[in-house]
Length: 224
Image (cartoon, rainbow, N blue to C red; front, top):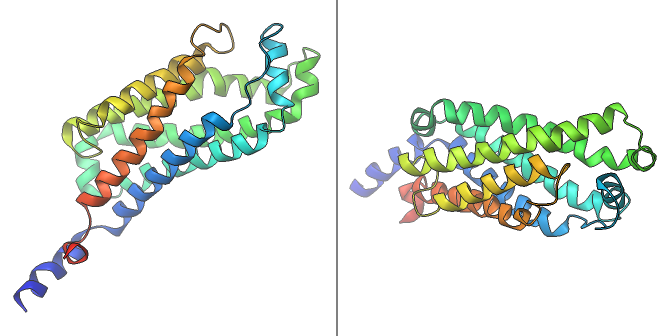
């Protein structure tokens, strides 16, 4: 009876929404990591417009970006859920709130990214449609902001132990910064394209941070 009376309150005081948030981060991290290898490589020949067109007409474009959209959406859902948990929100503060906003915007941007392939003919002829312009904005502004957000969450979350820890923190920092730099410059130079594989570390951090959170917040009754 003594054991039951001690574990039951713990289970009820552990917010289910927090565990859901961490689970979303795990799924989002897996999807983000998987989206990298699935992404069409494109041709190295021609200028940036020709290289972009070669990716847009690749049959891998839609599957890769559907997986990426799942990743962005799950990260956004996870951060929004964690904002409702005082134990996480109080420690991360504005970093979490800003991160959730960026994640939602990035999810909308991933939808734009997905349907950019419908503009392949316009891109081939050098035409700039509203969707192409939005696509370029997502690529060079929104995606870099998402990468910086991941790096910031990794630092603050690792230091406060509210999201991940100091052991997994470097994965988020390196992956987030690599994604930010690679996406911000891809439309202009090829110099930082090799950073895209490194950006996959952001997915590793999301999975690790989510798993650490699930273990920390698991009801004691479930652990016995």
